[in-house]
Amino acid sequence: MYLDVEDGVLKNIKMTGSGCSISQSSASLMSAAVKGKPLDQVRATVAMFKELMTVQESTLAHDGEAPKVDIRALGELAALQGVIKFPVRIKCATLAWNTMVQGLDEIP
Image (tube, rainbow, N blue to C red):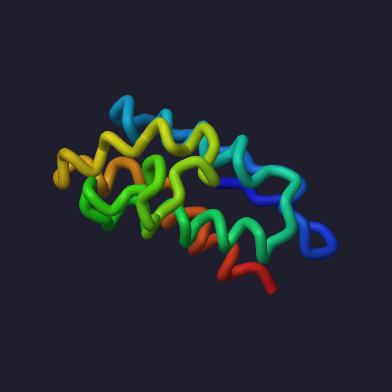
């Protein structure tokens, strides 16, 4: 993974690799969601996405209910909410996210 951080902003992100369709689509959606954003906003997006991947389906925000995770705030990332129905696939969806966080943590 290549991360280009300048002045506290994730200017560019590039990934190469192979994997299942869930890991590939999650990585693609992640890149689009965080590119060009300040690092604090990137980390907030990561936290929100990871929260989505750990909640029960019944706690997702839907019309009129008190949300634990507001899926509307996730934008296109909400397309991955169905993954929570298949716990074995959650690692697929979060792989690129964990890799990005590790890369961000290693930036001096």
